[in-house]
Image 1 (cartoon, rainbow, N blue to C red):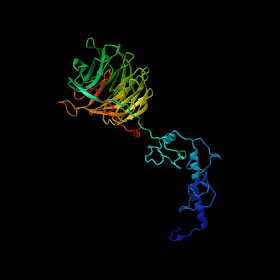
Image 2: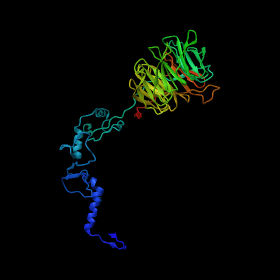
Image 3: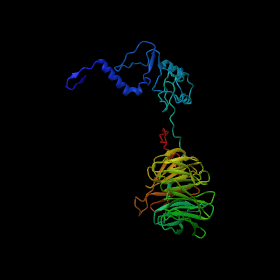
Image 4: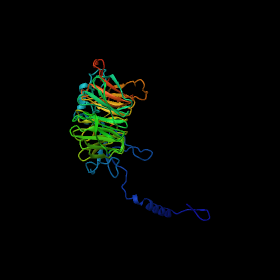
Length: 485
């Protein structure tokens, strides 16, 4: 029907209506008229099935008939990439329930099923099966007729027992935050750097002050003692990197080049090379003897907070406030690998003394990695604070120190947190001044030293009276639930 000029409806003849519809179909649906139908054609054997309210035929799962699905056109389950449909693959048959059971029984016994059979209780026992192990079908108590079972859920292996550590000495003397600490190779003394702009050398056995070195004009952020020469290296927020001759207790070299505060430094263990990292987003490699800047390692987009060296490749590892860790090629001065798994600033990196692995600390997680390519191993979750420092000994005790004054001790292999320490701040300090900025084991690994915000150095040692009976490992074989990234 359409309306004429006089307002009265005028009927259309049927031919005119068909002609208009044909034009409309051709104009609007012409591009898709050539496409194959998206319906599935069915070849049925057996009685016809009823249709639903939309005209689609219903196919019950099991009614004794055999149904063949012929795939044509756009099938909802296409074959794998690069596999064309053939006469053998285009027919998808639905197996009956008896056929599925016989197929499962005929499958070879998996290792998981063998383990389940060994651990299965006797018939009539009220013991439950282990978690994660389920038998799909049991006929007459015979495990041979069991269908495929779920894989055994991965569990954390039992951690190695470590004795707890206890505080036994507090050393005072600095007038500001103690920001860094290092033990000399002979294990006779150790050195600390502070926000009071001084470097102090202490006797390790007695804790008495031996020497104070002045020269920095701002906070001292890094110290390290050379094992190859009688030198002490220091760096600070005054952009300076100094080399002290410990025979004369004087500065003999300056390493100029950083454009902002220098946050950390490390010595290469086998060659006379010093590496420093800075707030100017770079790390620099220096020749110790000539003071020459060998390389400027650029690539980080924010302050580089920590740097570590090792003799094996990669020889330099840096952690930055841009949340990345970079493994560097020392010879070329370029990045080998960039690790982007952390979501927050990486302020601490530590290398295991025996294994070819390392760990990094960030407020989101402590992560363990494998050299040389930085393959991810596992997360150590639970120290929910800004982690400033990490250290590890050869027994596999990993220590993390945080801004809120807490210190967690972990089993390196399993990531089990076996002790948490929060030492009281010293009289005269604010409660907020309880941060741990640096920690280190001495050369015998029997003492743990921490540099803290309450202006003290705290010394911990293992509890000699502790045993596995008095301090048991409160560990249960829980299912591992770890985020990989």
